[in-house]
Image 1 (spheres, rainbow over the protein chains, first blue to last red):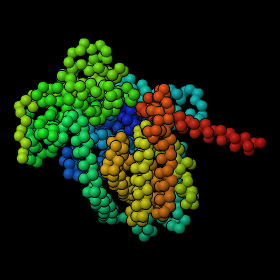
Image 2: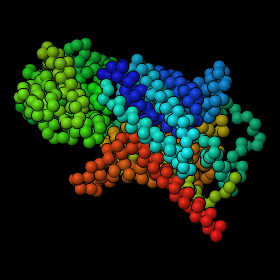
Image 3: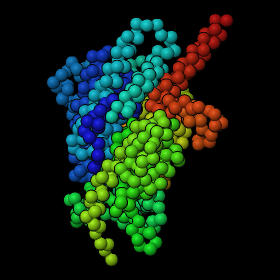
Length: 191
Length: 238
Length: 209
């Protein structure tokens, strides 16, 4: 049981303890996402969808099955996440093939995306109930999308500037991420 | 996996010279039977489960013992002079010595009643968490059940800003205030601006929110438990 | 397709193909738990354990695992060892376990481990896979301890809890905050970029001369 209000869970996950910039989850898509705001937005939305589904499944698992075998948590969670991503992949391929091509390798990579698995683990550790978990997932997903879109738009703009060759790529991305993380620290204490 | 277009280190094919065909299926089989796939995963899963259960049998008692020990030490710290404690559960608005049969202990709010050497009840300890500056702050605090006077507090979990917010457990002067038997409800005030009213706690300069959340946790906790405790504490089973 | 010697398998994971600094795998733990050297070492140890055990086991059974279910089986094996590491850490190093928190469980989605199974352990003999795993693990540890060292020395003023500076040192608190993690890794990678650039310039200069 957790005492936090729904709003504080949502706001904390989205902004104050942003999944990417404060909790270091979801870094693979964050580093590798193209410098296109469009793709970043779609990636983020796909993530929100999978996150909410994961939260639901984790809650079901925790409540009904894992009570008696808490040590099977990691294995069952990863199986669930892998299956969910597989299913989402098939669904997206069927109903939005263009999006599927645009997302490319990043869709199956969501299986090893720390954010999805991390959400299930955090939700369990903090003892969120059903509604709290969903709100947490939406907040986390929006926060992830926010970070992705910010990073993509900064990279889009920076493509036009003159960057020394050694900084191109991950070095610069990390420093931009550091600045973003610092900026987001300003939200601490809002609750 | 972070496969980027310009560099694909994972795709390196390293071939062991003594087994050149190790990467291929056996040439005769075109399609591995579904039964074989399922069987492999099932066997692997069963073995994995077995291994985990074995290690769990070994480690669980150690983990549980450590947790119980930590709780006991924390309770003794916030209830000075106590030598043993007893757990009470809040079941349907009233105190009970046990959980209803079939239910889990962690579903219910818990309070710990502390007794000294002579068997006298010294106070009650309660653990509570609220959102602080950074993340949830968890505090355990002890108080007298009849008067609500605070006996002590200990920060159990905190992710407050290092160097500022974390003074709520690192600054001895701040912590000592909670052991000076202040009358609740407490009020966090700016250091030095106190009027000497009972229950005033000097907040940490530069960490107002973290200080305030500790006070809020204690006030809210006592407000929740004092009325329930007034109903009376159930008799201890012999 | 190239063949490698056992010692190459071992050395390459340490620097040339360092999982964190070159391949950019396993970034989540590298940034999250490197705020002190102790945490960095604890995480490296847990990951090392999972990596080596998984590599050895998967290499031993590589001929029995059908191709179609190989990724699922790798994940199953890795998840099992992560669970074991989690339980043992909680029992024998409870303080460290609390500091690392959820990130121990997150070892299971560390791309580095799955990558090593797919690229190496599933195709090579057991002892070679072990060398590869140990080399990669050492590379991971070096990267993490480097990060942890920078962040702890600048952010708190200690190294492995040993104070290095006098009481007048004003620590750069930002280093132990999330932003500091990003900045530290970014600057390390920039530093490596400068080193590579100078090396290439020297080589080109040497060839031209």
